[in-house]
Amino acid sequence: MIQIIDYGAGNLKSVANALEKLGFNYEIIGTPEKLRDDAKIIFPGVGAAGSAMLNLRKSGFDKVIPTLRNPFLGICLGMQLLLDYSEEDDTKCLGVINGKVKKFTGDIKVPQIGWNTVSDEQNDELFAGIADENYFYFLNSYYVDCGDRYVLGRSNYGGEFVSAVKMGNFYGVQFHPEKSGEIGLKLLSNFCERVGLQPPPMLILPAIDIIGGKCVRLTKGDYSQVKEYSANPCEVARKFKEAGAEMLHVVDLDGAREGRIVNMNIIKELVGVGLPIQVGGGIRDYESAKKLLNLDVSRIILGTAAVNDQDLLKRLIAEFGADRVVISVDIKDGKIAVKGWEEVSDVSVEDFLEKLGELGVETIIVTDISRDGMLEGVKIKSLPNGFEVIVAGGVTSIEDIVKLRELGAGGVIIGKALYEGKIDLNQAIKC
Image 1 (spheres, rainbow, N blue to C red):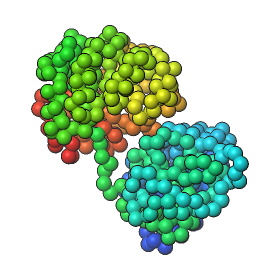
Image 2 (image 1 turned 180 degrees about the horizontal axis):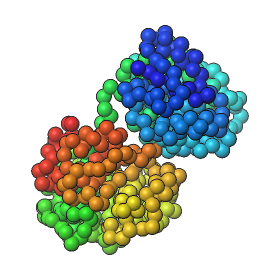
Image 3 (image 1 turned 90 degrees about the vertical axis):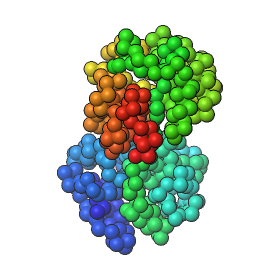
Image 4 (image 1 turned 135 degrees about the vertical axis):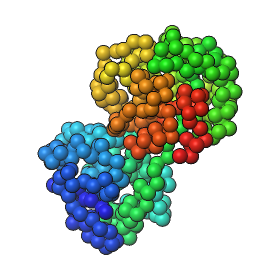
């Protein structure tokens, strides 16, 4: 079943006619209560962002849409409304995808009206069977500005702009597939038939925490509850690699406690194992971050620095890219923990996430400190919107991994459950 959302700003008839031509059953719904868990959702849009968001708030769709797990396709304005903000009417949008909607400027005719090519950037199912640089029909005065990781397609109009996006189950296209002839119908057919049939891949990250050059695990982040698993972290890393790991999660616990990188030699050796690694712990200044990133560490993890020095965070994202800077959202009693989890800030989780979105952060690691190292499973019932979310803390079973995938997690970090034999890494990767 296809459901088309009617919020008073959509080109419903054209979309409905296209679906009828393709032979798909559909219904038009005007209230969130009618949304079905088994439906694919089309979110068309024409008109202005301000009035569209007003209609969404009146109907209650503004609260519900960001929480949806259904395959979801925003068309034209429907795509733009998935972003954080639009310059049109100075509008706060749905915040599903980090980024802004900007008006075309320069020596070009605005709005763009007519046919334009779209490049396929990710070989996604949405564009299956559609040749690269094919033509679609556009009618837009504004365009999306977002991180590369969300981009499915690009076009050019007075300069390159984003014409198709994806964030988890959310897709958006700036053009009108329902007005783009056979190629547009093919894209709509792909969405209705192919998209969402397989769960998205989820990154499984084995954890290597280091104290005194040794591989250890803490319980609830308590440095007085340390259990050593190996005196040779590189040997552990090689075993994870043999089991099929695609990336390692490495934390310098000495560094996290002291506020500086302590186990740099071990980190260098781990880079030499030949797996991408993300590294956190004690990265509190620009030089430390730069040194790690220039060492071929795939990405760094900021925790305390993201809370206390957001100018540093902005600088690192600007210089190295958001794809190489991950933020650790370490939660204790509803607040953000810092300094190796030994202190709790006065920053609420909600305020912290809002600020991270404004700063252009794309990937976060969410850790429930109360579950970390307890082997008691995860209790998370929902995940923040607008980020790729990696979950840590309490992952104890394959069932936990499946649950987190269903919630939309992009990855999980597994520590003690691997070392204690509760989870088989190879099985976790394949599940």
